[in-house]
Length: 263
Length: 313
Image (cartoon, rainbow over all chains, first blue to last red; front, side, top):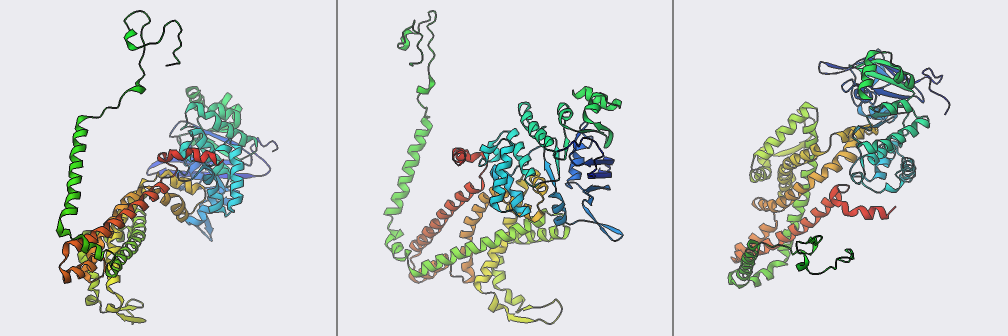
């Protein structure tokens, strides 16, 4: 992968968020959030809890409906269809098709407990993409090898540690060949000694040039791996920029005080 | 013992453990005897005596007429009745499970009219005795003399007399199946709500449609909670089929009744029915525990499969 650390890549924006608004009742979680992400970018989203950063990735993945603004993936409007002069919400089938292009890794892993590790990774390709079982198995084993779990293919998720489960979840998301990987606090549910193994898998993906949006509390990790840091508070993006520069020399007082609290 | 090779102190009997310096020898509790409470000994004795008395009663009371039981046990009429009972149990349960699953999904959906229809169904079919429902279906022809196919309020396209369509067998299936569906609804609903709600997100995140997510991810996990109470329902159903004898269905109980109404050998013939009900239910227990084991795969209870899983690598 060539150097894609700048924000205006010639390849154009993979993901465009335009004035996205999300409300829970009268509480406005996302307040006209706009964000453009280019191919190969690794965007770390940081901020205090309740700042709307988890909601942001859940909205990108269409797990939450948005109340205003719009989200585009490779120029395709997500969740809606332009029908003449009207915008129409997509049905479950079309939504499912759009979601296939986005990989999601949850805080609580979300592995399917009734399937083995390998079956978890094969489920999407076989059931959704229509791959043959043999192809899916070969790919699943390859991916599980990449996250260092080649010897666990026939284990059930409950027999694995949290770190191992999260690495399976990453392999499962990758098996769908997503255009963008979204991570919702992937290490927050892990014991401290297991955080490293998951972060090293994520940083391998970053080196391989995968476009990623990572909601995280691991500031040191964000500095190491992310090309860009986005700081959110109160449903707004308060500051963003090159990861090292922004985290070393925050421009806003809010980010400075946030960093002093978490570092 | 041989690991304690301190050298200076010779290991010997516990009498050496005098309060002197360095004389402390820790015991090993692995050699301890298990304790059995005297109460348990007493109860074991009591239960054994009771069991012996029951066996004695069964074998020595001449009024059981075991020779009569033996004569009818495998007679053609009884076996036909058993077949009808089994058939009714299986088909009515399948109908009940299918209806129960559909109605449970309707109950949990955000579609108002579907929810209300489901609640009305539950209210009507759980709220009235099964016996009344059976007799009602059997006498449907009184309310609706003809069954017709066609559009509402227009002349029918095809028409049959109800009595030709609703045979006693169909009336029994309708009665048992629809009533069972109401109970199965509650069981399936409880099962579905027991699945971790985050599994819905995980399935969606893989790009699954709601239908696929339900059949591949949610329902198989709900089965773990659905099977044990469903086992109860199947056993209940096997016995509830005896009710259909009132609508002249030739089930196990009915075929027994036909014989003892003629011969007055009531007790031995009831014992024949009891024998077959117990055989059927014993077989069902076996199926249930197999199914339970299958659907609890991946959960902590089958940790015994760990070596098996690692062997396959």
